[in-house]
Length: 333
Image 1 (cartoon, helix red, strand yellow):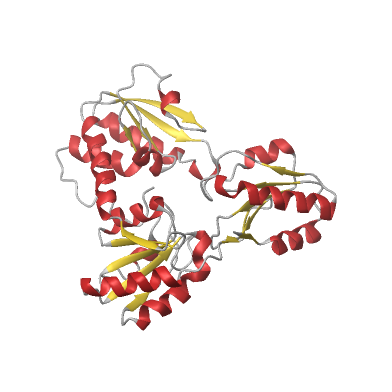
Image 2: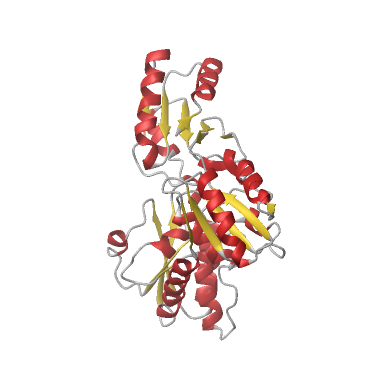
């Protein structure tokens, strides 16, 4: 994994900060340590590493940077279409230079038996630079290959775990999606949101797998949570306190909708949403969280925990309205 340290040097030289902080995904901490050491040695200023989990551009932890009193927070490894958030947060690219050629050729050859004609290529932040090389490989085998247009924070071909605009860019003509990278987290979400055959290319083990069966299990679990909440009379709506997860207006909207249906609602605010944390609240039959939709979908909770799309589906069920295409949307927030 290569962190774009040259960009960091440019920013520090231009702004002359008294101190900086760095954060990023847990898997990059070792690399971030090296970069922090390089900053301290090169510029003679404190470089703090924020060791908390960092799940994406919605989880920048500017509170920690403010408490440390730093002038710049470098968020590493969450490449988006924006270079910065406000004056303090600077997004720094970290790209994985592993080669996809062997696994791409293996997949392209094998999928010919499926008679796919048009494929969509998708990936996460770390593998964006390999998209066009892999596109060329699949085109050698006769496929039409589409790299969907980005929108909002997303670059072309890039998906988050909750946001999928490039996957829908040519949805009607795409036969299958190919995700570059070793991330079931992203690939499952693509399969759930598009309901198209979705394959994960793992360049480390040089294997590819179709992820739809795993995605179906996750989807069934998410739907079961909705039905388990159907008889809930008292609902706790949790507002996330992380930077990009704060959705108070959405919470208040859901509060009104549930109260109009005779439900009692308790508003709760949390920074880190865990099963242990929810157990502190008594008399709550089910929870809705408007922080990160993947928390409700992926994590285990003793009581029903619903994301915003699940909550709106529950409202429809209470009103005896049909629920269709629950997760087949561009953005799960």
